Image (cartoon, rainbow, N blue to C red; front, side, top):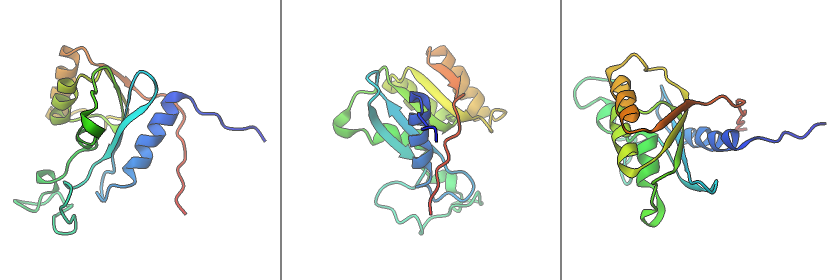
Length: 157
């Protein structure tokens, strides 16, 4: 039997996709992995409620008023940026993420100096949030590319 050897993109996207499985979002689980030029993982994140908040106490629905998850959830990219250890610099790093970043995450990505984004899906490409994100990332010179590696099956038994 031939041994499966994955390339770097597949490895880091696999980490992002495994991280996504930590999300309790019933509609979209997103994971992110930030990697430096030495191919070392600097940080990971997934979409979830802020730390120290019981995520059972807030809505996971796209509801009305205060029952709207978008008022509370931290996106995977933002969590990965905020989860860096000891204020590790992210300038020049690559972000692997399962869903193309929104405009709010794009601002943070640009501010910390991430140089490249590798994403799997851009299912919200027609939204103003993603169009604004694309515009800002292009203006800031952030390289953007869609993931073209194999899909690595992650099985939880």
